[in-house]
Length: 335
Ligand code: NAD
Image (cartoon, rainbow, N blue to C red; front, side, top):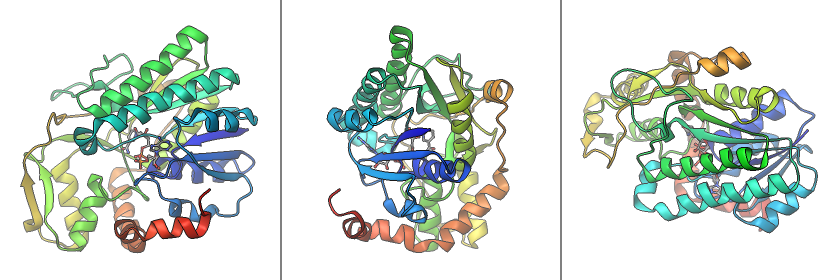
């Protein structure tokens, strides 16, 4: 099987590429990533030289390049590539529409042209908007995104749905809750809190800190997508989550405790505009219909993740210093 994986130098995409080459060593992976600030080839260091992995630096909205790559016998497209940070989408929405909506449409057209056997759109629970104190997002929950990020992801999802309804394209959409684990860019909550705590810097916590996110270990997300590629019923949406709802302040205090740092580092800051109060995923469908089960329990997963950031301090300090850019030039030139 030959897969085109987009965004495979980002957090989840790189974990997915490593996971797939481990679980299916005979598969070929073409990994396309524009290497924005969030893409990092160091995430893929352990598979350098693997003949079944080819990295191509390209924008998913570049029709000619996507055409050339898919024409070369691609069976499956898994679309992770996205602008993914809500705060950035509030400052600069345009790039979110370009990548998350237009980029998805370009990939869909190419998928249709070459009759690929599966298109998996990796999406997010944020397209469902915000929950009150009770209830969970199911696949039937109306799409009511609140941030430019989630609106652009919802736009991409609706195009994927339309290509199935209109052209019969074999698609699935997966909607996952917040991921955590190795290789997450230090702007996101868990790595941000770890890196700032280690430097004894103030820890910004939005509003009252009681916003709730539902956390899933990144490898469990990867195993769910693997299952959807192979068993997903065309046209279906699958929600992915591990029933691990935690308030943001609980996450911050858990990290401080493990690192032996004082809670006095916590600094409540003005709430994010349009901040969704609560996300919670109902993963019953993927569990019952495809037999998916997460392997990682949150309490041990978070400990392992904190340890990974302690063991890989060079990885995140290099990103911050920009030295990673030099690495790319040295390793790959202008390819
Ligand atoms: P990320 O920001 O770490 O990685 C995104 C990757 O996409 C980067 O490597 C970046 O260089 C690449 N990219 C951006 N624009 C591109 C373009 N135009 N062409 C090619 N590549 C481009 O994001 P992530 O957290 O790994 O998220 C991956 C996907 O999973 C996204 O689609 C996101 O919406 C979705 N998702 C993320 C989470 C989460 O908790 N992180 C949860 C649910 C769903």
